[in-house]
Length: 169
Image (cartoon, rainbow, N blue to C red):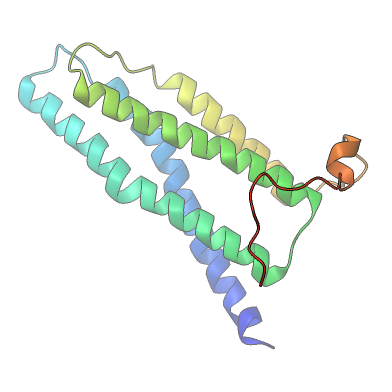
């Protein structure tokens, strides 16, 4: 057994832990944002505002980065380069987009007190739930997607040059 094979279960456990924290944050932060209300006492508003900001910066974003990094490491350690994996990566990109949207909303609420109304908690939660469900389906079912008809320009090299110079080694 090689050193990489020994590390794989540990990296996978870290990946799942970071992923769980990231997903939990994507569910919790929109609910916290929905509590940003003008009717709150100034002190309560500051507490909720600080909690969403620090939760996003110091917990959820590092968990997202570490989940993606550990997942990328697992791809190369296990040498999994299949079509279902690329479908999963597209869905993970959707989670990244939700993450960025939540971060943008946190900044918009902070910079424009009372002017920016955060979205309700249901829309980001449903989007996140749908993406997580799709990711779990793809990862656990590992469907045979090789039969999908792909455009010919994706299946064969076109012989075109890159729009920039490639350094020679």
